Image 1 (cartoon, helix red, strand yellow):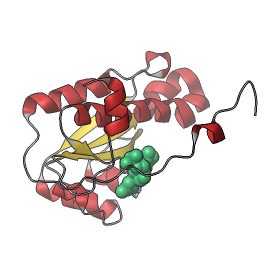
Image 2: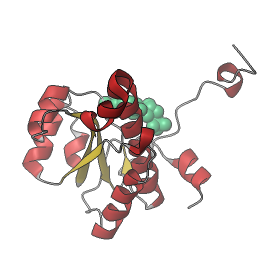
Image 3: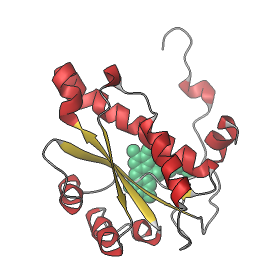
Image 4: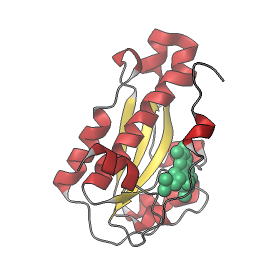
Length: 173
Ligand SMILES: Cc1cc2nc3c(=O)[nH]c(=O)nc-3n(C[C@H](O)[C@H](O)[C@H](O)COP(=O)(O)O)c2cc1C
């Protein structure tokens, strides 16, 4: 699929069919995350692939009851291994770069999954400590996003964007 078709066609989907994600497809999606850029190539990315029903249910509870997470056959918890970046970039690495890096990886997951015929939703509303507990995150590893992946059971229409002429500025604001 053309990259522009993926960027335009991808939607946040919150209803999933139960069919599994093929192993080869999951591998491609994980590799797409791995290929994201990172500040200083510090690679803070850590990915927890959740397929266990009980673990998904616990993620739902940690994510303020967003039940669609458990409907999807797979949920990836995208995490930042903060010390990998902060060792080199101190506070800016800790507060900004490792979050930007994992956000870039998350977007790659959304686009790769869509290109392979799957739907996703970037879930960021969760109790970080509770998610860290569910996935047994070691010290210094922060959960940044949860991404359920599966075949879509709904086709949402694209939400309106603020027009380009309102957000693009020439030379300065
Ligand atoms: C950082 C971030 C956090 C988000 N958190 C949630 C969430 O917790 N639950 C949810 O249903 N959608 C969440 N979304 C999805 C947005 O609601 C969605 O991207 C937005 O409404 C635009 O729709 P679209 O993705 O179909 O273009 C999140 C998106 C981002 C980028």
